[in-house]
Length: 114
Image: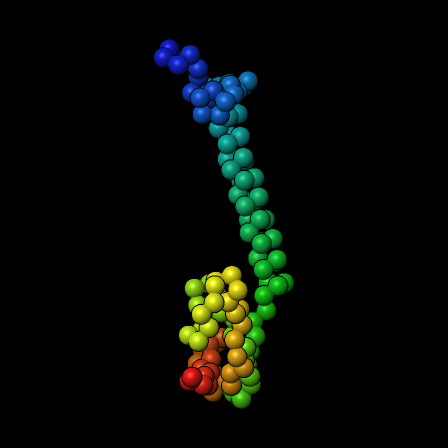
């Protein structure tokens, strides 16, 4: 405080808190675990809310051998024959036939070579 004329809170947060923690107060030890439990409950509620929102929009799709699949090209993936800007490039490609089911959500597709 002597060199800058400000408290550390004023430097970091641009305000001085108007309360003081009394570390000798007996209820302080009981209040901190309650506050931690409330914060933990709030985090758990947020995680459950985010999971519910994700589950409503994303449903796993199961295919059978012989079905036709459309592939979504994510960022960084492109088609060899399509040299366009990233902004205008294709987002989905082809209708590919499912040859076999490799894993739970993994399929081997019949892709024609150009």
